[in-house]
Length: 147
Image: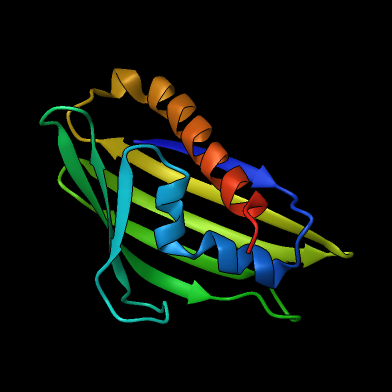
């Protein structure tokens, strides 16, 4: 497994950054060839399940099912924290989103431990670089997106 992290300081309130980052269907607009299906009724909470389906041209496709196992939106007293467990056959690991406000500035951290089933550990550095690029782009797009 490989671990990577994306840190940003968006010009948004912590509540707005949180809302955008945890709008699961909106992630599909940021990740090419992927759609998101939320399988449990909202609002998001511990136990929410959604699936990111990535389909490449031709017959190559895989599902990345995730479950919310920790859910604490940001408040004036503390940071927001969400942990997702990846429960797929191809992609496993976890992702954590932290959103906090300090001194009038919002800080976002997306951390992820990712394992792509068929790839040997030898590819972990490449997986980390690709993950950081893909999720960095997605986080940037979500935080830039107009409401």
